[in-house]
Amino acid sequence: MKTIVVASNNPVKSQATLRAFQRMFPEGEFSLNAISVPSGVKHQPFSDQETLQGASTRAQNARRFADQADYWVGIEGGVLDQDGEMSAFAWVVVLSQNRAGKSRTGMFYLPEEVARLVREGKELGIADDIVFGRSDSKQENGAIGLLTGDVIDRVGLYEHAIVLALVPFKNADLYPKISHRDDVNN
Image (cartoon, rainbow, N blue to C red):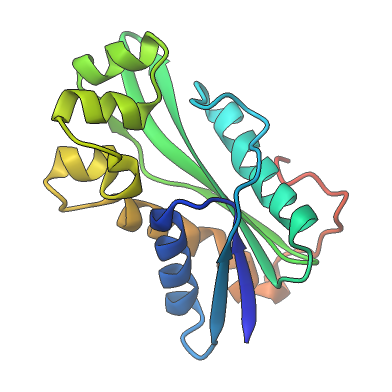
């Protein structure tokens, strides 16, 4: 049985991770542990690079704090505010002892009322809760679920990106091995 450590206590991230691994490796058996680790970035990252750095740092910190696993997964949600419009997305980084994969979710634009609250310093999940009259929506369907009527929820959004981040693991002969010192951001 392979052990996966997800660098978050958010059940959405754990569920998406387990589903992605099961889809990519249907013959495998997995146990999943969730731990809270620092991202090294602001609570609400405001750029593509900062969001990728958060996912990478989470995966690396999970490996540092729970080193007896087979895989470590960091997921970081971020926003990009350009030309008066704000979009949301997440980066995923998956590490093993000798391999790394990364991918980004699709992006979507936020309603102006939500974007305004994020610009004022609120995290996206809190802004969503205020605008949609919810509580802790980031632990459930998230902004994407609220905006699509759950056609795509947060689990689905993340699962797709985790599957893509697992491509180097499924096709190990086509991707180079890494060492712990290699920077996954390159």
